[in-house]
Length: 464
Image (cartoon, rainbow, N blue to C red; front, top):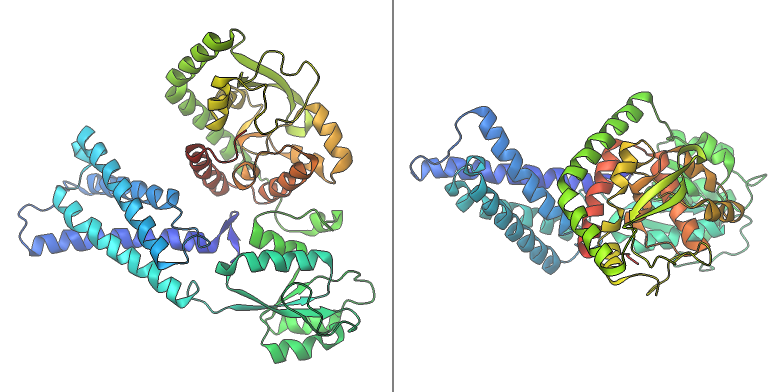
């Protein structure tokens, strides 16, 4: 249930296990074909060619499984859903590989491998996912959680747990600070005792995980009992840390500067920053080369519909709050900001016909690849805000300025996890995701966000 580089271990486990099963299916097809005298079964000519051909297959099938949400345990908890999504994934992958092999036959390991390997891999992965659904967990027992305290943050955390049954968490109940509300139902789990009964209830209920959600810690924190439980192997965490772990965001409610200072993460070593910058430059160059024809067509469409300028330039705040000029394809009328800055609303009348299409598929952001080359932005990071909104939000939202500790991005964790922001409350929610990204900054997380961004673009999710 914990994360690696910001990604749930369950997701990584499923991705790795499915890749292994695809490899096993291809290996079985290769060997079965030889036994059944398909003739010269495989066209593998040398280890390097073979490795390249298999890598292509893994990438295509992996992407097909990912974009059909096979690794999303919230969606794939029913047999019928898994069956349909797997069939869709394998059909799309087979078509994509067929087109690829037609263009470049050298990438194909032989049609006989596809004839046996694809069905075998499909059966193996389907059987594996159905087994996991039947068992009800990813090969581990349900983790029993006890909430010590009845704070609003703790109640909010339990609501999140109840939304995610795939995490295999069972909240056995709350402990009241004074033991005055025994039997009272706060969410679904009830108050089952007092904080003073901590060790007794942990033993009685078979608790694996203690979460601290005390409204007031002074004088009510059972320090000795918690130390004994920790040494006995019971997991002990505070509410913000556990909330972050299961939701992928750092809740601002009851978040303190001391928690940020003492919390793990938030490390930005030179090597990570250098690799991220090299990745940005390479990605921006590739992106510009691949999308240059598309950008030319977009520029022509904008000019035909509403004339010049084709590009929209706007001052935004970047790393350390330094202002820079961000580029976008113009998607609104030329007089859109005549009355000053404002958030984009649903069905905003300022958006042009071409602009509506561009915003739907995020194509208006393409010129920001040049901002990335200049070092003003990154491919992945918190979205840059206008100075006007930054001044407004800094007064309303604690820790808002901390998002300027990294370069802003074309896409980001908040962009793929939350809808388009159009209010102070939305900005607060997006900051919770941005803080999580800053804490867990890594190339692995960047790759995951980029993959998810392409999915968002394909389904035009959250656009305005």
